[in-house]
Amino acid sequence: MEKIEISTPEPDKARLVLQEAIERHRQLLTQSVVRTHERVKQLASQLQVDPDRLSAGEVPHPEGQDMDLLELEGELEILRHLREQVETLERLTLCP
Image 1: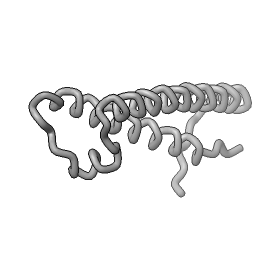
Image 2: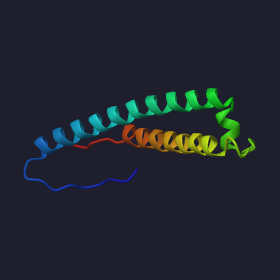
Image 3: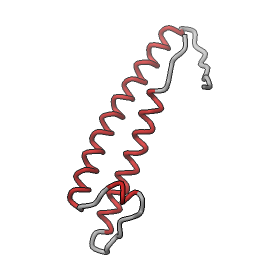
Image 4: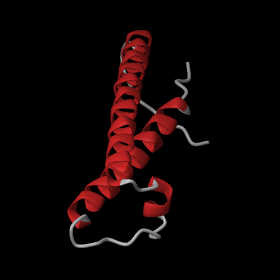
């Protein structure tokens, strides 16, 4: 694991500020994951599509559903990205 170094005249204060900022950002991302996941479930149910099959490219895009399926694919990509960000933040450790 690599380290990032930050210079500051008040390391204890900076560490506290960084820890709080990281935790707050993790909470916001986690909330976004929940909302996006609910949106994915809603769209998948409405379109009667398995999101995993859609992501794998196994679902045809009939002309009448093309835009809706693209929206669902976009939501799935956003969900993947949000989850990656949460995982990244959960692996961070502030060193003394």
